[in-house]
Length: 248
Image (cartoon, rainbow, N blue to C red; front, side, top):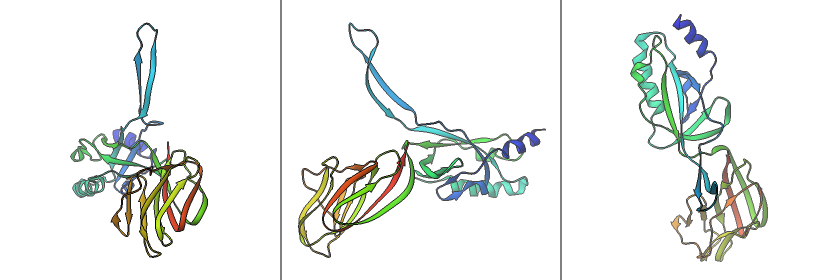
């Protein structure tokens, strides 16, 4: 009776891909996930007033439990399958996790806590692998644009701000700048440049290099995000803009 119920349950679920490995080759998976990340809202009481005053809200990390069953009914294969599954689940830093109902976007996840892999056999109940999601955003399509000096319009995609990576080949001069015309924010370097120089800005890590050497940006620089359709300007030469869509 249990085997029949287990097979029926298995047939109701689809695969997940973690860190480049399709786990459906090893296990059956059942995922229950929230509509959005945990929201942490804070309020404070004000003496002499009813109720509370709102202070702030942010989306926190959360655990994503996944129920799994091994894809084997031969006990002689269970040990080997456990080793393959352990290798697929282990990573020492968060990795892309694609879920079955949203195959074009991924979360950055890492396995956290006990897995009880020795308990997963065809005759045993399911076990749960818990992925911890520290970054509450989903990531989607990777985008790339080649632009020349002057103004350019960029559509960031997604519904959350995205971080640019900029690789620029400037004209000869003493400075180079990229500006978000919509907000007035910009990042600039003041250093002798030639037409063979290479400038790189990483807006997420707030890091700049010139010819692969760490370079200071100007004191009034402000690393910025792009959001929706935005208007950028580069001062000279050409640049490659790269980013990944972000979604709630």
